[in-house]
Image (cartoon, rainbow, N blue to C red; front, side, top):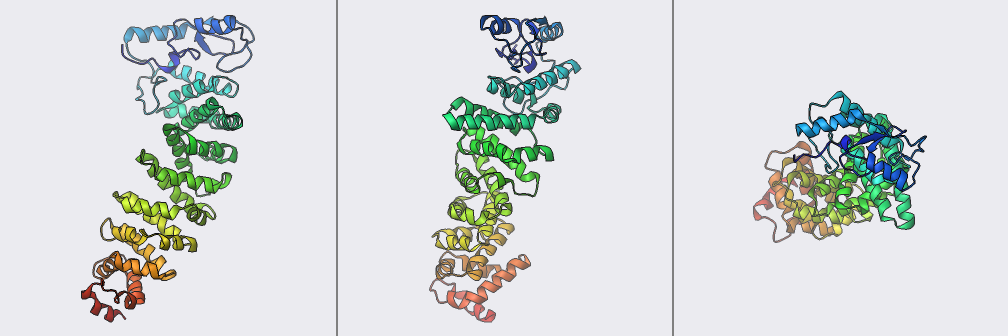
Length: 423
């Protein structure tokens, strides 16, 4: 048939298509063979999915579900939009979702949430939830309304604590899978954002961002990006700001994933703008150095503009201007973008040079501006149309430092007389 079975047709224990679905006293349906082995071979007395005690061991045949599965097998096509467990993102949902299949999906989702914290099969349960919600807005809303964000957040916190205490790799896997579940959600409503921003929940997210697999780091970055854009407050209050910035800087330099590095750039912009003391902290952990190195190699307009904006924000503090002045490539990297990338990039580059040459000038910066061609480009800017603020800053820099710059042999000869007119 070549099609994966819908998620609700799979036994929660074996994760295989159910042949003889039966329902236990908690309302969860399993394949008869798997649940009988759980109860009678292993001697368990709880529901595997919810870990709730079973009031009895009656196994009630789920004839309705069996008929739906049989119909699906006969037709060779799904009756429901649910993705299989092998689907990790972006499933295409069938528009012919039946009311019955929707109710069964919601029932299974609620049952899984009720027993999530107690089940020993957390990773499996979380994967089932993610598969159930991926690409399905209605199921995502049901998940949020049922307290799913808080439940998954508690699992993340618990898993991180167990992993940290005993080096339990499986516990950290549960933490990663929980992050994958949260990443599926829009996380745009205030209640969900408040839950994720609480210290006990944001710390596991940052831990996955720092130490998770390549895929789970993307999930964590998706979460951080969404909560960063959801409000105007400082979302870093519950974590060590040094660790946050270090993690973002490491991701910026991750050549293996341009998506991850691009997201890190966006989040760093928000952090530097909103978090108290973040600019000085960022400079302290080497942000200016990293950004200059990235700018020197940047060849994409949007990336270049965001790096220049970050450098501008860094150079508004004394520590940032000092770090900029000390880097041998800083002026050259900024000058390279002027009159080359975009009007916005030129404007930002001029603002950076303004901060380091007028607000707090150093002899090295002034010399580098001549040697790297920054001064020549400033003089060109005087003759072309540009934003009023850019023009004003350019004129101001040339007037203040023109006498120094024209003493250099490499200063453009054709502009010497023009400088006298500005004096």
